[in-house]
Image (cartoon, rainbow, N blue to C red; front, side, top):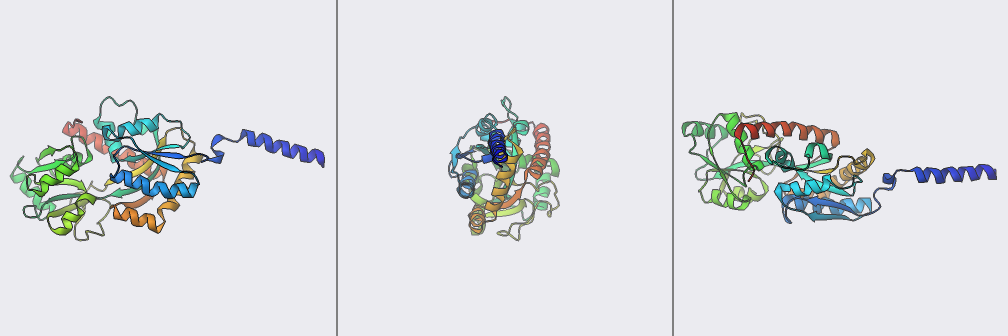
Length: 321
């Protein structure tokens, strides 16, 4: 019996020594890198889910803002980090777009980062000044065909998703409208409010108050369905123009070689966090619809969007600033 016990204990010691490093994951703080400044939607999302994820996994989750190059600096830092689940990226639509727009990237978002979860989407809305905006998407297309290059639309910069949505509309509708790039969304929306620019594609969060007050008219919504907060505004598909079902999304990505067991652990814990009523309420307040798609579905969406944006960037000859 003593011999058997010794062998059993010895076997356990050997098994423990052979256990992979991720078996006790996490046993130290986890870092979430955000490629946008404090107070941005991506940053707020990271802090909302990071707090609860840290509590669930019994390790601090630290949010670090590493801004620049449309989130590519943060993405490259994560891609080059150890693949152990302790450094993650709050990835967004921008990371997929950058792969086609930005030349000279020293990493490949599609190859070097592994999807963990598509957390949620922030619907994008096409708006114009209430006094002059067309009553519908069809009316806008009719006007744009009658007045080529006369209608203007604002974006937060060349190569941004707000720019590319405009290019996608131009290609699908067969119209010519003039792009007016700004350095950020705030000056772009300011000039639309002032009537200096006719239209803007923008996340709904920063313009919701202007829509509710009647200063801006929401023409159509980009997303999987109508917004509860704007029930009378149709989606692009409902307005007769399919291909605009993907809004501004936010997810978590890890270095490509991260063990599947670690990704599965993160995914299961995140799924529980996103079901918490207080988390959902906070994300709702930021205009983020929870999706919680796992790695396989998230990868499918990234792959599909990469093809779409690459096609648009080539067709419109889009160059990053």
